[in-house]
Amino acid sequence: MALTGILRPGHVQMRVHDLQASVEFYTNIFGLLETGRDAAGRVYLKACDERDHHSVILRQADQAGSDFYGFKVLNLATLNELEGRLRDYGVATERIPAGELLETGERVRFRAPTGHLFELYAQKTEIGDGLGYVNPAVIVDDRKGLSPVRLDHWQLHGEDLDGSRDLFVDVLGFSLAERILCEDGERDMAVWLSCSNKAHDIAFVRDARSDTSHHSAFLMESWEKLLYAADLLAKKRVPIDIGPLRHGITRGTSIYLFDPSGNRLETFCGGYNFYPDMKPYTWTWDEIGSAIFYHTRELNERFLTVVT
Ligand code: FE
Image 1 (cartoon, rainbow, N blue to C red):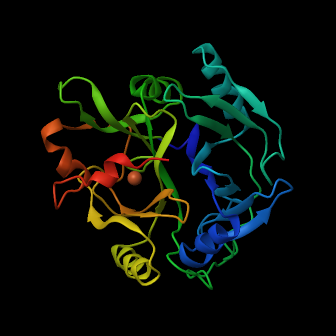
Image 2: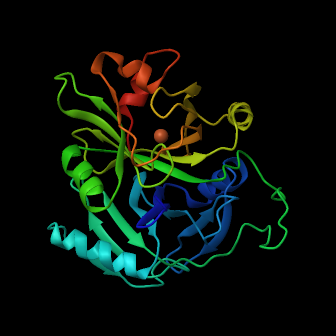
């Protein structure tokens, strides 16, 4: 299927305690590029291979976490169509005017059953990746730090997993790629959903702590870059939750780390190509260790308990 409808995770607004210290971390260590600041004091960042103006917005706040998660859709007709579908399904939507986020068109905002605030948008100023569009070079100059290539996916936690899963699959056109079953062998404990050719664009985990984020993930180009990232994180004394490691789910490789405010980030690499005709993989409760951490087959306490 050609990509239509929802294209990809496009931006996330994250709350940070100390804005300047966080900008320092996200630019010099994590390796995103600052692309703007707005009148509200928010800082806009993008990864090196992203062409749109930003994928991360940092907002100073007392409590860490994420305010909202935005998906880019194909065009304005798609935006209107998806808004109509949400309303027909009984989901209230709100239009956020163009320009409320820098260089971003009108957004359609709605709250999912897991409590998270999502938004869809069709327009964001393309500032390019610095390589040009004619005979581009293959190397982006002056990459700093970990330098992930793009925003990849989110793992979000909430009580009504069934509600968010059904909304994303039945209304927004996502496909179920993988699931972990609850101990009862019937209900979903967690689901991995794709709107693209990626093994997942979003994951939901059943958790009484609704409207929380487990991590925002960014794509690395190779296992070598992932290993370098771990070396650099260790050198810079950045707290690593766990990794480098292999996931059973998606078969991706990964490091989980914390930003200075305690927001968990993932650097993710690999994973199979997903097509919407593929039958979902199912993981049983007794194999949850292998599903998440394939080599050690054991979940660590912090990975299970810390969300923001
Ligand atoms: Fe992830």
